[in-house]
Length: 170
Image (tube, rainbow, N blue to C red):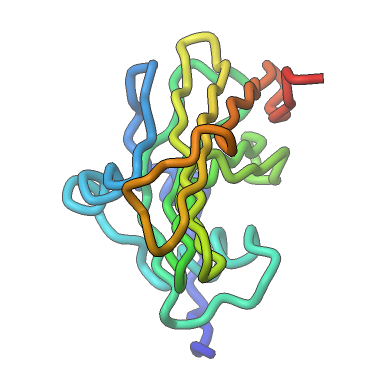
C-alpha cells in the first residue's frame, strides 16, 4: 500500500500522457514496449487520482501502468488506452471518459493472461470507424508454440459516438 499524494491533476494534464494516434492501430503482446519508451511514465498523483479508481481490485506496488494513446476525433468524450501489468496478467484497457473526466465505459481489449496451465492471448485492431476486432487464442503452458486454433475466437466491439463500448456479436 502506498501513501497518497495530495496533488490534484487536471483532466488535461492526465490526457497529455496519451498521444493521439492515427487509426487503425493494432495492439500486440509487445507493443507496450514501444509506448513505455516513447511516452512519459505516469507520476504517482495520476495513478492515484485516475488509474487506481478505474481498477476493480486493490492495486499493489508490483502493478505497472503504461500510457499508450488516445483515439482521435471522439468529439464530446475522450477515449484512451493504457497497459496494465500484474503477475501473469498483461492487459490493454480502453477507457472512455466525459469532458469532465467521468468514466463512461471501460473494457480490456487485448493482452495476455495465464491461469498456470494455459495462456490466453488477445490481439486487437481499432479501426478508423472505432470498430474493434479482438482475436484471442489459447495455448498450453508446456507447449506455448502450439497455438490451439479450435479455442481461438474473434470478437467485434465498437466504441459508440456517446462513448459506450458495445459488442457487435449478438
